[in-house]
Image 1 (cartoon, rainbow, N blue to C red):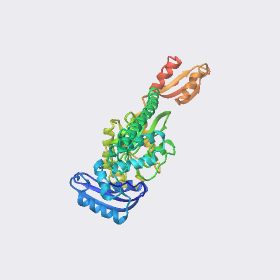
Image 2 (cartoon, rainbow, N blue to C red):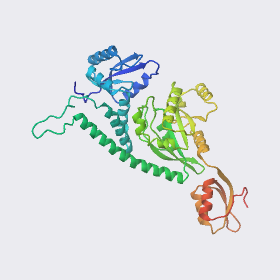
Image 3 (cartoon, one colour):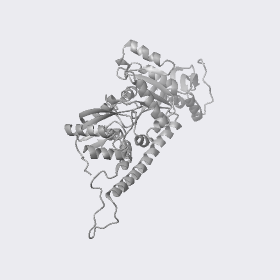
Image 4 (tube, rainbow, N blue to C red):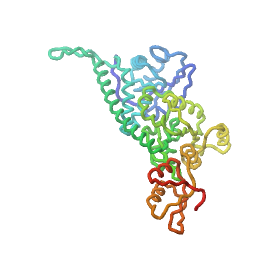
Length: 426
């Protein structure tokens, strides 16, 4: 047995092509690069069936071990999920740390989490992942030594670690319950105020945060890298003509998202499940866009987000006119809109599509208020419902209104006015 090294970023990347499964080596390489690791070796391994001991097979594992020795690597990152025993066996053979796909994504998320909730969720996912890997991986996990005054119940270091991790997981889940309660209160308030919610979803690096900033005039961090932003952000969205909604930016999806990660972020993704409409952002310039779209749909199905969608074809500024037309022809019959979050092209049309989906029925017409009903007039202005105003011969207010149906009924209930909108001024 050997002691695991705790430092060093010189890594060897192992791309796995498993028979019958699609692999995306370019995407995996981008994931590795986003951790700031220094790649000193890259090897592709083709296997028909996973080897029970090393996953890669004995010969391939020895080949990787030789590459690790030559490159003096500190870390091997494998583009597939490994069982705890396979990870331990590989570490023993390679004499360095081994990280599988799940561990890599969890590490990236740990680097990017900024909010208290995001950090809790990442720590929970990491601990649940780690708890399955505490099985004789380190030389210090030995029975505690006896001696005068030192003999205890015989608990191993392994059992101590498991107990401490279990206690921490329990503590985090209690904190997450409190966070969930606050989020649920916010959702109840939005429902009470009949405020629609728009949730932005899509494959990582499709331009979600950039589009979110464009729509809300915000400054959420965005960059041309996988998982540039992790923490969910909620902002007000102005739809024009007095219409408003709440828009939520969510973490990007990716193929083979670790199961424990989806579980830990299930509370955050509640915003997606309960949204009025989803903006499914697709990178129009990505040759694998259809595959990416299918993978996002799989994750949405996994979390139970059966919500109407608007397909947003982003980054059209990277396509020529013929490519744009061909893309729109592919999406014929779907509620799709082509935009550029960078240049702003197509944003007005997108807002119109969102407004059409989330805005309730609206009333249009004229309402006459007496000169003594200034308070009621002010309430209509607060709702941004007044489009035109005239003053009658007796000083009455003649208002042309465009107002949501539920706002009109709320106005009637609050003021006690028994009136209907007419189509022409009186």
